[in-house]
Length: 128
Image (cartoon, rainbow, N blue to C red; front, side, top):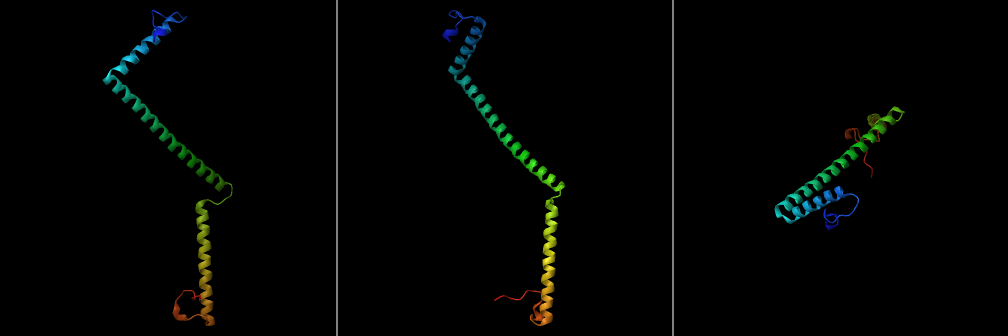
């Protein structure tokens, strides 16, 4: 603070030096007073906590943006002829239903040929 003291400063910006000197004097007074120092520390902690909350929110926004982009890309693929997730599910269900019907027909064929006991209901024969 001595280098910007109004009585000692010899540079080209005396107004800037006076302003700098007053800032340094005020900082010294705050740091030397216990109550003022505690209040200053509280302000610093609040700023750090605020920055952390902002960063956490930004991370959440980033995840939401990535999720939205993935869903948009999936929707775009759906419009370009690829199956949507709902269509894929319907296709899986249709394949499963066809497989169940084929199994039922095979069970009936085995009953007709006598290779399956008619009392066994509609279960497949035991392998063993």
